[in-house]
Image (cartoon, rainbow, N blue to C red; front, top):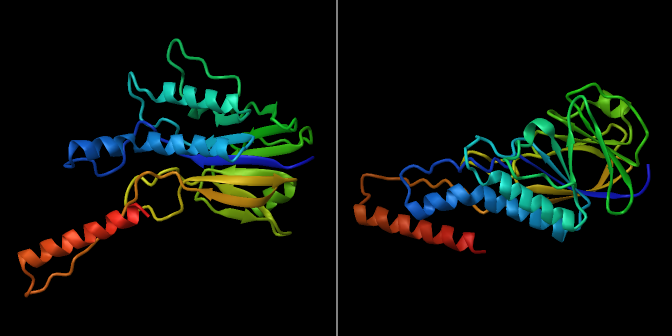
Length: 261
């Protein structure tokens, strides 16, 4: 296998699913939360162009709940076309890519992989890339400079040994897996945008520079337009309505300042 490969990976865009906690909020705030998955995805694709990656890997639910007349497929088609214009390939699993509505065709830079059918293509630099779906039978084949394996869980050390010089992209928490001999050989995609306050893991996208199946550098790309925060107030027998109201206003002012930093 040859030179370096720069990729951007992310998971679970779920464009049709608004963030949690929408009920009871004002209409403008409901609209902002409903649009947040699209804003996060837009930031991800912008980062792919800005970081000059050669491959974008999207693992997990792209659309989420299917809705008649949803703008999600058209949004994806538009963004994939932008990436094509910049010489960036897109890799998705076949069962996670929505069926395009009538009149829509996915651009030629979209490469679909399935358990029964790997995909191979040339990237902008001319290097050959082969992608396997780890849910199917894996066959070793040194037919490309870079081999990527998409999996639902991080690989074991035995798999890393067996598929030397391959890099694993897993649908798991966004952490790296080191081979016993050294070097990060796998990285989870996590989720693009935290959908509720209880999510504590790192979210966003991950720019990874690969050489011979080892991540030489991993850079986090923050795409989340919504920040979750949990606040609690300690009340005592001496607490007054005016004092509590003032404390709430103070806390909200603090949150607004943090949000704009």
